[in-house]
Length: 296
Image (tube, rainbow, N blue to C red; front, side, top):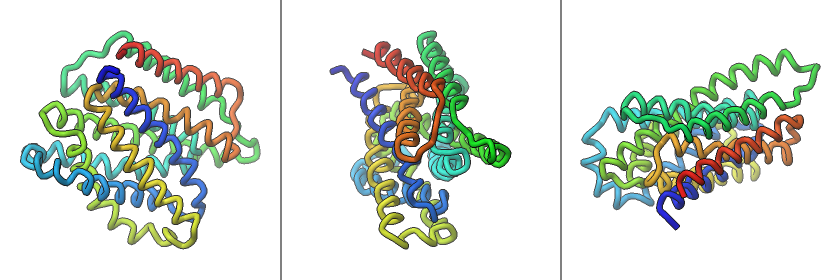
């Protein structure tokens, strides 16, 4: 199996794990989405730091040589989970995930175009457009109860805004990681450095938001799962994948995440979609196949 294909599979595995986060978080009904995001990403940051301690020591001088780049990545990592989980809380698991991830490829391509002068291929654009069409179909296909349409509309609007913020910050730290990797820094060292920097903000914030973090087995199980599986294991897979593919392609591959989130939201949480929504899932998967074919 070629390195690009292994990179694709690494990003895809991370996307599947991340697709479970919204459904898992929904079971901790008395926990703030800010607390869930801060704990999951903050603890995962510590674990990534421990797991990559040797690499961090080896690449420390290279990483801190560009402090503004590191700070940009760390800030993006800190903002991302807060915006992402709040978006899902306000707009629903499926829609919140969809908006966050669907906007990331556009932001990633813009970052690469502005800073790297990297052109976007026609095949990538076709795959991107197909993925976006699928995302729009998913959004249009969501069933909203008529008696709560006004309230749901306001909540969804702010959820969409936060989803865009999540998409921007996600693509930003993906781009920073790719810049690090391109300069010879190990992917695990890059991700761990940004995550550890973000933990300096995320973990202290739990003093204000984490009141019910461990008040019962459900809350405890949810936050531990989130930190260990989607965050820690997922980002190990993500960092591995970034070794061989661009940030814009990586964020495009993660269109698999909203598809997984939709399936779980419908199957376990009772969120409902019309037929057009399921056609959107098919369009997203097709865009994934186009990416895999290009990199085989």
